[in-house]
Amino acid sequence: MDMELIRNIQGWGYVSMIFIITIGLYAYIYHLYKSQREGVKDYEKYSNMALKDDIDDSLVEAKDPQKDEKDNEER
Amino acid sequence: MQSSNAINYDYTVAKYFTISAIVLGIVGMSVGVLIAFQLAFPELNNMFGEYGTFGRLRPIHTDGVAFGFTVSGIFATWFYVGQRVLKVSMAESKFLMFIGKLQFWLYIIGVAVAVVSLLLGYTTSKEYAEFEWPVDIAIVVVWVLWGISIFGLIGIRREKVLYISVWYYIATFLGVAMLYVFNNMEVPTYFVSGMGNWFHSVSMYAGSNDAMVQWWYGHNAVAFVFTVPIIAMIYYFLPKESGQPVFSYKLSLLSFWGLMFVYLWAGGHHLLYSTVPDWVQTMASIFSIILILPSWGSAINMLLTMKGEWGQLKENPLVKFYVLASTFYMLSTLEGPIQAIKSVNALAHFTDWIPGHVHDGTLGWVGFMIIGGIFHMAPRMYKREIFSKKLVEAQFWLQTTGIVMYFTSMWIAGITQGMMWRATDQYGNLAYSFIDTVEVLHPYWTLRAVGGSFYLIGVFMWAYNIYKTATSSKAIEKEPQYATPMA
Image (tube, chains in turn orange, purple):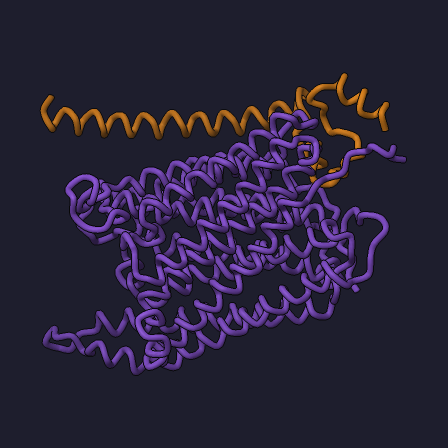
């Protein structure tokens, strides 16, 4: 493989990657706002994870709801 | 009401790293003030023989504040914030507790060896990567242990979603791991060729490649040690201290990905007008300017979090620390891109404007967040209120004055220096010799050292306040929900 070809691959690879990642980033932003607007997911509620962070505070979204119930009963 | 076997957060490791942040902050910044005075008064280089010269002490200052003070602050806040936002206690896992303690003690041993080796003059000569390979290996082990702590705690969490701060801590872990390993790829000369000391090595890369890898690392050390984990801190401490939810959680997510996407390409701006390919320089310059967007995304998100609550700025000195930190973050992330524009860089490069830029970021943003973060943590860790609110206020104003003196003197000095270096007479000869610039800049170098001293005195006030808080301040019965109680 000659140097010229390697440089071409590098250049096109670089430009394609920037393009794809940029599209990906903007698609992600669109997805976030669309999900919130249509009520699929409320991202803003996750802000409460910093405010209600005492070990006894209720969970914003339980990883394992059954385990959480058991923990609450023990308390 | 809690039962007798109720779980509580365990701050043992967070307390350890709080102490190391304070001690290493004092060491690193004291050396910084000394070398600032040495630049203004060179005879101070002769105080401790070869061990007191600027060349020996400078890496102890830079590595001391970056990998000592800041990294200790990152670890301390992680072992506090991580538990709370994941709603899981270190006490629930003996394994994670053991790993945390092991990480701390290996870290302390690593720091001691690093400081002694630098004082003795053993260095690889790569900026911010001066440690010889045995110290590098120790650092990698400490870092892997931290990774076990992060992912271990995440593994046993109760909250399903990872709070935005946790994303930033994970990015810090992965980013630094990648950067550190690749930039410190080195050949131990003794084992390969039988030449030199057993601990001596040379970089695996050569020439321009070495420079590119070095500044990919160097600039991203700023990204993943001075920026990403500090954003993790402000996304927790400002909302928690003020009782206000983050203005826009979605903005925090997209700023995160924006920052990850852009930052890694900007390092080449350290090599403008050098022998690296022109496209690398142009790319770095463009990406540096784009970097304003995700940086300001986070900073504005923080300032808007205080919307309608600006009255707290008067009442609560910790909110002052966080808001000023956020403002300094905005200032330095605007200043950096300006310096990365090729025509500006032609004037700014190698001048005092560069350390001026670095220090309004590190003193104003990094330092204030770690100081403010530990002030927030202390009453919750030691179950006592902050010893003296007046002392916190006095520290804030003294340090703010120090920072302003530091960066304004360096702006004036740097631009003066750049203008004098490039000035020519009517025949095209250089108008000034190097010593002409030294004479003009001397007052500004003195001012810088005095500004640094103000900041350092503030660090001693912080250390005293935290010590008194931990030992003799008034006990609190119930953990405060938001604002930190102060006497």
